[in-house]
Length: 278
Image 1 (cartoon, rainbow, N blue to C red):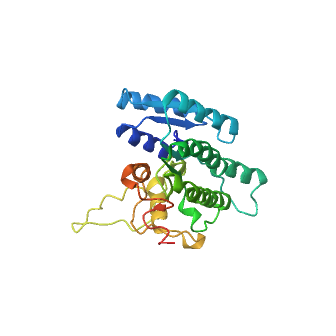
Image 2 (image 1 turned 90 degrees about the vertical axis):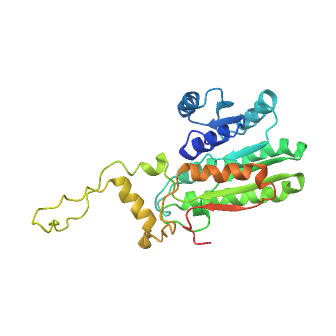
Image 3 (image 1 turned 45 degrees about the horizontal axis):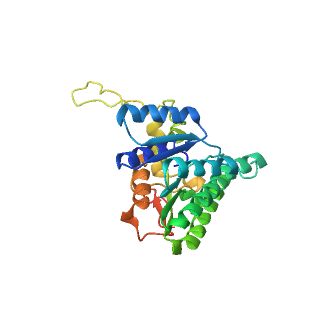
């Protein structure tokens, strides 16, 4: 599991451990991995969790990781490509560094991990690969050109790889979340946003009713995401809620399992209908 220290990654790790799966949690964030271990030791002592800090943009590090897992832990039966970075802003003002940074992890990391792991799976003719994509790969997003392009590339790489390895018994799928309640999204939720002034309500007996509580930034952003932003060509969420990391984790773990043994080359949108079937 790459990107294991992030919000969705942690939920996937927790779900897999609860199912009794041996998990190798990978991330560049060594401190985040340490925190992940502490969380699991507190809630699920004795779980089969191994952590490794790895730079997915370095082929040697990726290959060394896979060699170590196969030699010390055992044959790899499933891979989750969950690592990702985002750089937002106008496409016309985006720098070469912005583009390279996003693609190095979001596309290059997926390629390096998938290549190294499926080479081992091919010998055993069994395995499952799930790449965490984004619904931004299907519908253009204002201000997210590099990210959307990288997720589209990661999706197509995964599905193209899947065509090659399907005859070898390896299933490749993509899970594409929409807006999900993770630390990255909550970064904009910290300051309270007062509601617009409205007439003070008065009860029938002439007493002044208690004013409504100020809307927090969290609630304000959630409301905007659910409603959509037409002027920025962002659709809303028909289901009327923002996803929790566990929603994504359940989909990923299902596709990894034998319950999904006949599902391959599929892009599963977990976005509350935000892409409207696109």
